[in-house]
Amino acid sequence: MTTPSVSFEVFPPKSVDAAFKLWDTAQALAPLAPRFFSVTYGAGGSTRDLTQDSAHVLRRTSGLPVSAHLTCVGASVAETMQTAEDYAKVGVTDIVALRGDPTEGQDRFAAHPQGFQNSIELIEALALTNKFTIRVGAYPDCHPDAVSQHANIQFLKRKFDAGAEEAITQFFFDAETFLRFRDQCAAAGIDKPIIPGILPVANWASARKFADRCGAVVPAWVDEAYRAAERDDRHDLLATALCTELCSDLVDEGVDSLHFYTLNRPDLTRTVCRALGITPQSALRDVA
Image 1 (cartoon, helix red, strand yellow):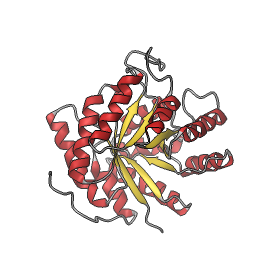
Image 2 (cartoon, helix red, strand yellow):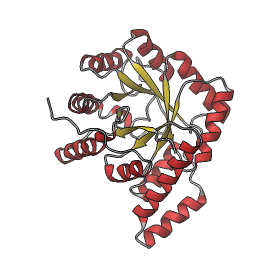
Image 3 (cartoon, one colour):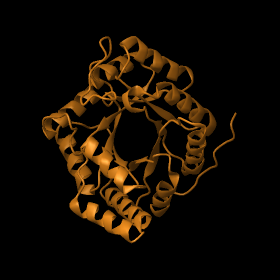
Image 4 (tube, helix red, strand yellow):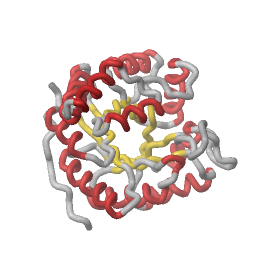
């Protein structure tokens, strides 16, 4: 089996304890020589400043590329582009450009009156600067707001046409889900890389709720397996086995890069990477 390249998503801390957790996660995973770390926004852009600070620190201390999330939520065009410029000033020139989730208390996305109306407008503006490598989101199980899978894929194509260079998918539970999506994208004329997003399940109840919110289909057998594993106190064993099998199936089908949603919990991700033959390459360097 070919050893895939990897990247890792983390989220910005909101407390001192969480800051240590983020650093521990980076320290545990950086030796695996990831292509990049991505740093998320909170719901509604609530952690914009924390995201910027975390991206800067990760970039400076790990020496690795950092891809910072940037959304259209809760900010004008000028404010959003200033955030992008601030990223560039500290050496963070990779951006994951997203529409963003609805603000708290809202069921659907509502654009800021002076803001970008959707992710395509954001991607076009970022591309015009010629300063950034732009990544975008993709949805193998179809975005909840898309009227059909065809519309879902056509919108992804428009993101690439606007200037995106790579897409990272929402997580999924069945390799066939991604492989089918990959084939559909190719048939639609998409020839840019689409990287599968992988969620090592640290807590099934939380993962189940997240899947419901983002439209990720949960096969009945997966639900049943986790419920049984929790009763038998074998949750982590099952999570490791299923995640490793999923990644292995993808690699066997020609996938050469995987993106892990770590939730700032590195142990399961590191264990799965080890099972895939991804071994430490270097130590995280000291803070400069």
